[in-house]
Image (cartoon, rainbow, N blue to C red; front, side, top):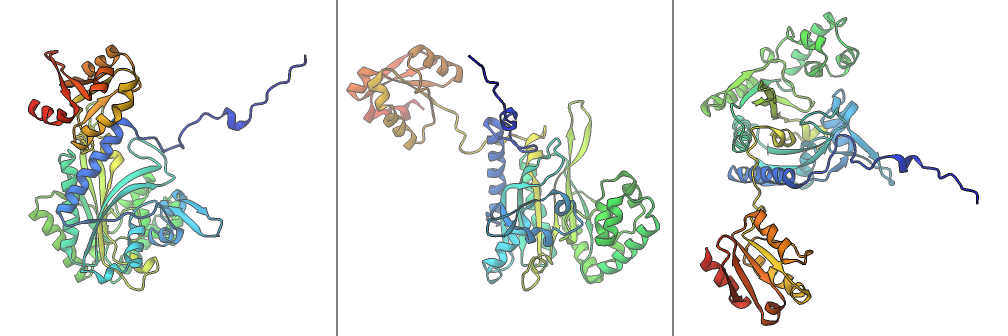
Length: 438
């Protein structure tokens, strides 16, 4: 009999795995994220913020216009697609553009201003994966839309810092700068462009290109030689108009009043083109496995007063936001591993024996659920010994044993796992009996 050689396709050879820079979140890590988001929402509500959830997919123009050409996000990192209907969409690389689109679309300008919003969820950038940085990453944002007042800058900073502190961050400080507005930025950009033209031979190819399209982005360059040149670059604060100077001075006064340490960073522009006036990054100390302490940026934000018109709105909407990179926090040694409310330590191990008991087991469990009594169970197991071993391992205070006799008599055996004493209780009296045990 002639044997035929089996051919293996490329798809069959490929190992099943999540896409590079993306991952499955399970077990303790899942609850760590959930615990953080619950705490962040709680703090946000206390400061007056309300929730918003926007789609993961938005029109590509929301980000190409808003985030800006000449940024790494738009030029290199955005995931884009063309639908069968011919629409050009992008997986959101950040949350702000979609939020501003929602503000305009739903006529939020007719509400009492400012509108305070919080939002969280995944964003996507085709970036180089590294510790705490993924291609699918999670953010929590706080934003105040509809007011140009400096106290709004202070509000989002204070609320964001409170979230980080409640999550366990220590020694927080802010790197802060003002990059002016349309009244005064042109003078600064002209001076900055002239400075880089004098040093053009040192600039990398990508930074030379940015000099033509968006010279402000050069301050955000990752190239070591450009970073060295940036040390001597003119600072934006020196070019601020009187209105921007007043605004920035007030923001710093609020920080001082709240005892928030800050550092004036003249090269700070953030990586998105929509920022105006205030820009900031929040820094904390992190200890690595070797015991060395280093400063790590865990949040950032700023004012974006011209974003609305840039993405197609009829008029400018003054706005300011604070964005937290949650993945980095979850992996930090200082994170408190906040437990979500859904996490309830089981107080009872439910044990069933026999076909009749298994048949009625879910009804008994539902009685306990409705009474908000957390349990653990092993309904797929049949032996008493294996189920009791699970109860011992979990250190639950008591077990409920539901066998054939109990199923017929509508009763259960409640067993004290410490003393080994047990008592038969009618199901109709079970909740009252368990209350007396507390």
